[in-house]
Image (cartoon, rainbow over all chains, first blue to last red; front, side, top):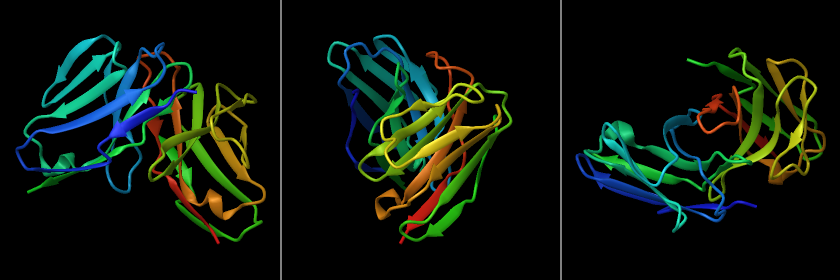
Length: 108
Length: 114
C-alpha cells in the first residue's frame, strides 16, 4: 500500500518569508502528484499538480518532484497570512493517497 | 466552481448507534469518494464509486458501508458506530481518475461518537 509521509508536521514562517513543505512516498510507480490546501472549516482544494521530474512554478508557489528519491516538495515564496492552512500532498495514481499533512502558520 | 454538498455538518451519536452521512454533487462527475480526516493520518479513503450502483473499497473500509443511489448522491453508513469512528468526514467528486483530474471536496461532516 502506498504511504505518503509529510514533513514537517507544522511550520511557522514570518510574513514575506519562504515556506518549504516536504513529501516522501513509498511506491516507485507513482507518477502523478497534487498539492491540496485546506483552510480552517473548509474542505481541501487543489492547489497545483506536478507530473514530471524537476520544478513547476505557479505564481508564488513552486513544486519540485524527484522520482528517483521518491520526494515531492512545495515552496511558497513571499508567504502571506492567507497562506496559513493545512497542506496535503497526494498521489493521484491507482489508489488516491493523501499525505499526513503539514500545518502552515504565516505570522504577520 | 464544482459543488459538493454534505449533510449534516455536525452529528453526535452514541456507541452502537446508526448514522448516515449524505453527499450530493451537481458536477455531473462519475467518481465520488468518502474520506476521513484525523490528525497524524491525513485523509484516508474509506470507499469510492464510479457510478450509480457501483462501490469500491478504499484503504480503511472496516465498520463502514456506502451506497451510490444516483450519479449525484453518495451515502456513508455507520451501522454500529464506535468511538474510533469519531472523525471529520469528507466527500469528494471527480470526473475521472486521470492525472489531470481534480478532486472537489465538500465542507465536511464532523462526527462524534460518545
